[in-house]
Length: 213
Image 1 (cartoon, helix red, strand yellow):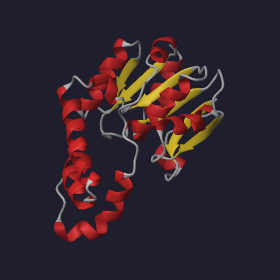
Image 2 (cartoon, helix red, strand yellow):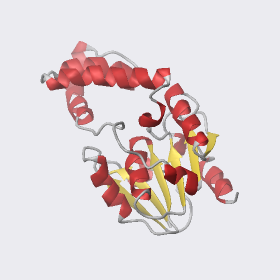
Image 3 (tube, helix red, strand yellow):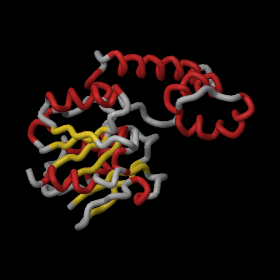
Image 4 (cartoon, helix red, strand yellow):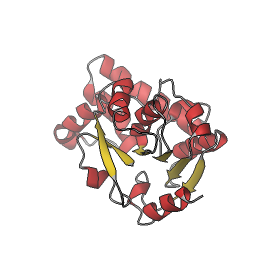
């Protein structure tokens, strides 16, 4: 049984366009909920023969869920395990920038938050003429649970076969993958799709090959 973790607001087929053949289900989580609550939603889908598929932040509650119930394997696409690589310069800079952005939130300044965060996350500055258009996205992003500050059950990586797939485009995710390899994970790269390596047409074949090892 394959369990694909998704953002509850996203279409599962868009989230995982190259799902593997065979039985599977979708665990849709609220990205604004505490990670432990999201982990409970995922855990309700798990059995001992489950392979969990998770991407980015959703890998955080997925790993928490795997720490609660036995699973067969983990497939993690660019997992946002920032807690594992805080000593890496690119990861530390990311955390510092988000922290600085959220100081604006504490003062009720959503535009100031977006001006700091947007270049980091979306590759360009806020254009004043676009603020009204982008404000809803800024508020939605501000409401999301941060991917760090969680007590990750890293021992799971050592006892459960784990495949980490990155896109080879961002040093943060490569640093995280390196730490996961040190814990016992297998790391593969599917370039060309940046943060969404699961969009690569070879994704399913790569997972199938991993399962055969």
